Amino acid sequence: MNRADLFERLADTATDWDVIVIGGGATGLGVAVDAATRGYRTLLLEQADFGQGTSSRSTKLVHGGVRYLRNGEIGLVRDSLRERGRLLKNAPNLVGALPFVVPGFRWYERAYYGIGLTLYDVLAGKLGIDKTRHLSRDAVLERIPNLTSDGLHGGTLYWDGQFDDARLCVALARTAIQQGATVLNHVKVTELLRKGDRLSGVVAVDQLSGKEYRAEGKVIVNATGVFSDAVRKLDRPEGGDIIEPSQGIHLVLDREFLGGDTAIMIPKTDDGRVLFAIPWHDRVVLGTTDTPNVPVELEPRPQEDEIDYLVEHAGRYLAKAPTHDDIRATFAGLRPLVRPKSDAGSTAAISRDHSLFVSDSGLVTIAGGKWTTYRKMAEDTVGRAAQVGGLPTQPCRTADLPLLDRPAAETELGEIEPAWREKLDPAFPWRIADVVAAVRHEMACTADDVLSRRTRLSFLDEAAAARAKPRVEEILERERT
Image (cartoon, helix red, strand yellow):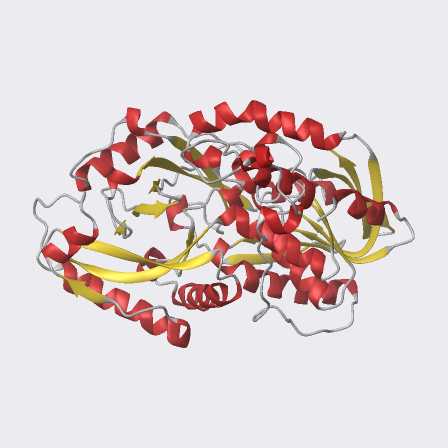
């Protein structure tokens, strides 16, 4: 992942790209991998860093979506569970199985949730992880020592997938480049070019140098998530909006607030939301919310009432209840939900399935969807884009394609200087060597790229990340010279 070499490809105006992808989150990167493996000349441009928006701010689950099952979205759940199985196979270093317990505080809940989660297993088919089963009260408390025992009757154990979302974005970028794609971060598309009434390319600006580039292509894919409408307006300024953004936030707590390696899923709180408490990187991730009518921005922040909501509801289920002072980090993401034909109801009721839109000028927009189904979304998008762009028909080749995780820093850098073995923070595993490798081999351009997405320090402990930031900036400056 050499940014300078990739810019040389972008600067070659003789190149006629087959597919130009705008957006470097999960969906856009998945489209780039799919298009490149079909043999299409593929260019991807991301205005910020890979996964900097929604794709690094998820609940860290590769899952079918138990609450979608409750909503009757059987097809979405089935597709999600099959994609979960593929990810477990194709990215085993980044995606793993995680046990969940649904605690039963009413006598009938074990049977009720057991039936639904058994259907969840059936929909996964041969790509399932393990069977759902009932647990006694003592077995639940053994798995989750900090779960309140008041009124607990037992629980239901089921399995889902967990991953590091930002690291998987980088793996997708690596894989796309390996397959021949040109993939660049911190390059913003500012204009769509036309020949007659059809789109023919893009104008883009490197956000770090200010240099402008032009690229011609047969078809342009808009995979920008919550920014989809902004890109669509580059095509048709008078066009209406299709995205209904919804904000979900997460709190990060110390491991003691679970006490084990099993996650909790509360399928329905007072207002109908799902509550998760999940072990991740030796911390606990608590989420999530579903807040409508939020502004579209690259760095959304949790609202105080969202934080209060999660702290209060966690306190109902945890014996040692967290307080605001126990929060190590917070993060917020915007879901790119597709507006329903009727605006009635809350964003929690809007389907998480994806939709494809093709404008009269040929802009292909992929909107909606969820992390787990990124590969299926990309398959559908590239198939449609090939039709729009008049590209030769090629089958999708990503169902069994291994994704490239980063090798150890020692492998990428060769000999490690003794000073590079120093940790960024004593409580976390990341070293100076990991920062150097991220800059040299993973296109990390800013301290936030390093601290938030090549490592996950900002998402785990904001104070530790603040302490490490000057050292990271010093390394970045040295590596630029």
